[in-house]
Length: 319
Image (cartoon, rainbow, N blue to C red):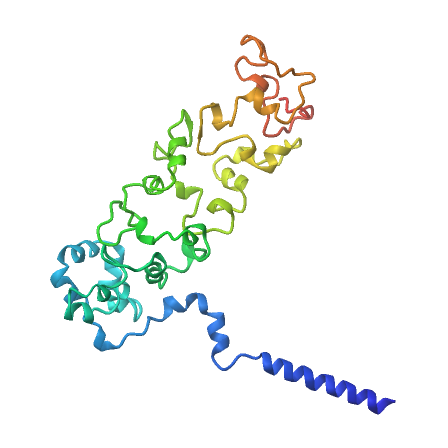
């Protein structure tokens, strides 16, 4: 009985070894799989030296764009201090080899993926940008809501004549760029109670990462509450008496972009509280404006610590 059993174990070992060998990647494939995300940044697309004409050749005709990009961070890197073989191509790092365009300026196919006459898709245009911009803020661009909706990088950024001092934006400010599409949020920011975006104390990028995030709505933090706590640290706690809807999500009560009610509340305080709390001892019918249920801070007249209380008698969010 011992020898047949040993033979079975030997057969299993051989099959396992064969399976592992079959799963093994061919030489070089493992390194490609592990470094796929940074491959575009580390190696330039194939182009023979004979197809490249140099940035000086481009500047002879495109004088204004060449002068504009020379003042930007892209121009200083590509034209003055290149760090890789791709960056050494200068203009052709983004626009592609220029030999065909120089030989026949009417050949629209040879003008590269950019320009008003270009028929390249947003995906094709963005592929030029992610050759370098594939880390940090842009790590989650692939698969992000903006990428899936076909948004081109050039919708928000311009390389040659930016209107902003930072980020090469097509508009002077970040909110103006976002407002090109998010017109509803722009309208909300015009309400009486609003985030201080109009006052330039806050920008869309302080809460959202337009290039992608692991969370919904491109939120920078792991949750809405963590995002809010960056500024509203006093609401974080921990508290002896927690208010469940507050701990769950700030958006249960607040509209972050703007509201016609005080403190960015979705509805008036009394109605807001009674969405959850039954009106047994706090009737929900219309009250006289002089009553304690409506006057001044409404429910907060008696329950001022609505975000949480540390007072021994603060079970009902009293002081």
